[in-house]
Length: 428
Image (cartoon, rainbow, N blue to C red; front, side, top):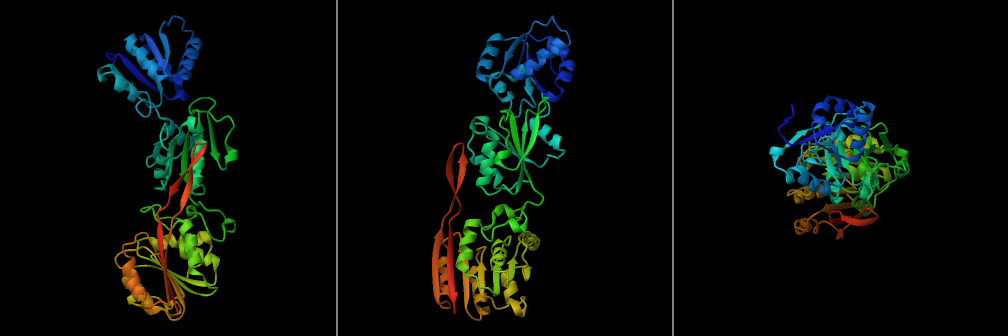
C-alpha cells in the first residue's frame, strides 16, 4: 500500500494496462495537485479522463521529458505530486534523479513491469539468467565486454541518438558473432502500436524505427550455416561451440589462418592438435586437407564433447579425440600405431609443462614434420627453443598482431586482439 503521507508518489506503468491502472489509482491520483510523467503517458491519461467524462479534475500537468527542467519546477512547486513512469522507476528510470534531489521521507515508489520483462513475456522466454547493459550516453566498449562473455541472452538498452539498434547490430558484426545470436528489436512495448521484429540483415530494420526501443540477443541453439555455406578456411569464431566456463578462449580466426599457413598441410598424413581447446585449428585443417588423420588432445573436462560437436558443424571426422593430460597420453602410448608418428603437430595451451610435452612429441616423430607452437607470452620461448634447437633443422619465431574494426556511430575504432608469437620448427 502506498504511503499517502509522502508528498511525491512515483507510479510505474505497464502501458499495455494503463487504463486499468488509472482506474485502480484514481482516488489517489485525484488527490494530487500535480500529475507528471512522460508526455506520451500524460496524453494517455488525458484520453482516459475524457473517455470517463472526468471534467472536474483541476490538477496541473507537467511533462518529465526534460528531466532537469522538471526537477527544478518540482522543487519550486512543493505540492502533492503523482509521477507516472514507464516500468520500474528505479531501473534506469526517474527514480535515481528523484532520490538525488529529494529526501526519501518525501518519496514513495510503486514499480510496474520493466520494458525487458514485457519483451521476454511477448516471446514466452524465461529471463532469470539474462544479462543486460545500457548504452545510453556510454561507450560501446561496454557492449564489447559483455558480448565477449558469450551470454545466453543479452538485453541492450539502446541510445537512439547514436544509432540505437543499428549501432548494436554493427557492433555484433564487428565481433564476428552475427551467426551466434538472434537479434530482436522491441518498439513501444505496451502501446497499441508496439512492434516486435527479428532482424537478420541491415535491410530488415524498419525505416521508421521508433526511438523508444530496446534490443535483445538470444543465443541460437544451432548457430551455424549449412556446411556448404562455410568458407574453406577462415571460419568465423561464432561457428564454433565454445566452453561455457571459458567463453572466448579459442584461437581467433586471424591467428588460425596464419597457423594453418605455417603448417603447410600435406594431402595425406597425421596431424596432432595438442591442447586443442575447442578443436578449431585441427578441424579446420581437415577441411583444407580432408585425407589427413587428426588426433585432438585436450585436458579440460567436457572438451571431447565440444570438439565432437564442432566436427559435426564443420562436417569433418577426426580420427581420435582424447580428453586427458598430454603427457599422460604420450608417456603411456595411448595413441594407436597408425596415428603414433605425426607429420604435423600443433602444441597450444601453454603451461609450465610445454617443454616436457615437446620432448615427448619429438620422440614420436619419424620423418619430416612441422611443429607449431603458438604462444601469448615471450617468457617461455627461451626454454622451448633450448629443447627444439638440437632436434630441428630450421627454427623460426614470428609475432602476429591483429585488430578488428568496431563501429562507433558513423566512425570505426580498432580493437586489438592479443598478440601471438609463433614458434615453428621443421624436423627432417
